[in-house]
Length: 427
Ligand code: TYD
Image 1: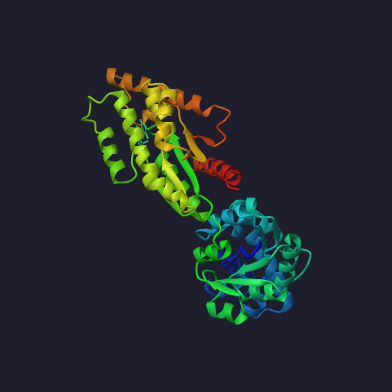
Image 2: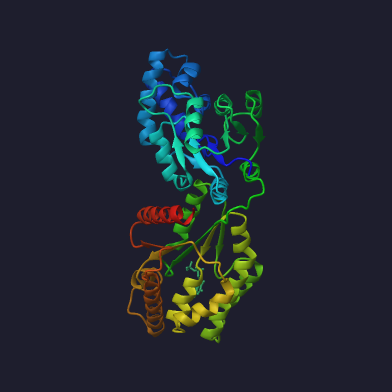
């Protein structure tokens, strides 16, 4: 790798932050009596210091601009800072750089306190060796000052990565090479005119340039578990949306299923007409579908740096076939070893819901008949096996969430637990 220290601008380079910034700028301008501007016009605020933007875009005086910055922060500090989205591919880039031994800094014109909050919420924090933003107390610090501080802190052979001429100027003022990215808020012309050492079009290209042949980090593997009727599908969609917001390219899959062959096994194993199927046959079929899914879909996606979300995995077989069908957890775990090898989830979301509650959505309200009684016993054994499995001390990957709560609360708890695990599993 040519550069051993990478300094990243934040807005327009790591995050698509226009909503939070333009809305907060509009709010401040309107409070100052500068009305009639569109959100589009406030896009010019992304990148340069706010003070300068209020003067340039709205024609404010120094005093007015100072006051406007205060109003801006009023909205930004409460709502605006979280109106953000990480560019797809950034988590893989940061993980790969870190694995290759590079030092990483965020060098941003955003006040340090907000930059820190964003770094934490959007998953950058574990990768950062330094985070430099202007101090609230020091007025109108330039990008060159910030780049200087970050470069001095980390040493090595630094490069500054940014989407606006301010980033390129900031790097050049310190004699540092620069990479201009065109996917943010600046144009290629702007970056060229500023004299960027390199210009890239996409995060993909940026990754190739920075890694210079060093290997890419593997993606992350998340599985979801829980009883039938626990609300898994709804929460799965929320999880995928969240991972997308964090910049992950998500590969969604379900078990039994995956590619065309695994889907055929799914039809076979879930077909209610197959009443003559023995429990052992069923266990092997789930494992067979899994062997196919792991090789056809999951491993290639992880190798490409994606986040794989798998709806059910080996744990389902342990709970349903091992516990529910009473084939034994050990035997089922052993039977699945050849199917999955070392492809195991980094994070498992367990939506905890006792069977009475999960089943009440499926069974009649009256006294259960014989078949229903059998079903209830089956689900109780399955639930107990899940609980025993996930109760172990070696289960740090498991994010167990109380799924009997209202949907939004389940989502909130799940995402917080997933973030916590991703932040430790990732570096
Ligand atoms: P799924 O499609 O996840 O259904 P749901 O959305 O209702 O959870 O799973 C289908 C069924 O397959 C479900 O009842 C659980 C069962 N199953 C097993 O018994 N063993 C396994 O290994 C897997 C993956 C699923």
